[in-house]
Image 1: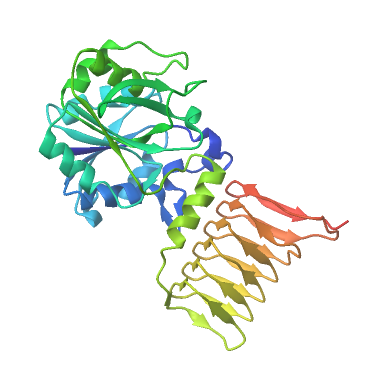
Image 2: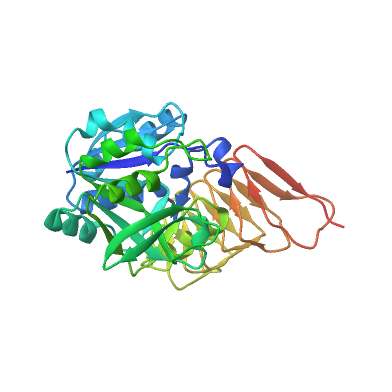
Amino acid sequence: MKGLILSGGKGVRLRPITFTNAKQLVPVANKPVLFYGLEAIAEAGIEEVGIVVGETKEEIKEAVGDGSRWGLKVTYIDQPEPLGLAHAVKVSEWYLKDEPFVMYLGDNLIKGGIADLVEEFRSKRPNAQILLAHVEDPGRFGVAELHDDRVVKLTEKPKEPKSDLALVGVYMFDHQIFEAVKSIKPSRRKELEITDAIQYMIDKGLNVQPYVIQGWWKDTGKLEDMLEANRIVLDNLKRRIEGTIDKASRLEGKVVVEKGAVIRKSVIRGPVIIGYNTLIENSFIGPFTSIHDEVEIKNSEIEYSIILKNSSIINIKNRISGSLIGKNVRIYQAPSKPKAYRFMLGDNSEAGIREA
């Protein structure tokens, strides 16, 4: 059995961050989202993985390499244009051949991994098995209708959903999927939809089984979902302090401070992770915050946010909350003061804050 991870796409909903970063490499708890998927596949006992890549191919290759750090053998598969999930399967046929495979969307996070799903697929051997989750807003997703524990209908982003079961970004297929992806037509979005391909299999009388997960699942394609995924992962941290903390500072709860980080005259209230060689001085870092490597924060307050590598936040009086701040960003106090701040800044940005 092989793995297929989809890491193409433009990440429109996370712009401007994704103008200069692959959306699958934006970190959650200081680890790229894509790495969680690679870990899940490795833990399921799969050793060979194809990664479908597009315009961010070189960035993905640099981050993942040959996959050996996870015990995987990685092959990169080019998708010239992001023409849909079914199209990604179609262009991967040469790699997958007749082997069954698990397809995993590279910007998804699933509690508990996929080992149980893979084991059930191996034992029951349906033609397809799809991961489903109960959601509050099914119209944002592909939605499944079930009858007698079989999938009978799939609809992509329906205006009037017939159930609250959304397609999670993990699928299991045998070789029958290739006939399906070659037989369907592009949707209104001009994409080959995986929901249409699976519906083709259902209509042909093939066995498509559901697997409803009970834990949390997050599609990290939007800012709110990225921050929520960060919150959930950080909540499972185990306290670990490897940096330097002065006597005037206080660390509360689940806090990770990596090597080379320095905390001076500050309060860190977990869950929080602080990356390598980061400086926190005379500041408050509140719960559910990830601060990456080589960041500098002075005289500021931050909570429920993600701060990427090599950024600086200096002398900001109001608390920053609910923010995703890219790499190499400078935020500093200018002569006047606004009432509140909320940031989503791309790489190499600079923001000067004026006081009223």
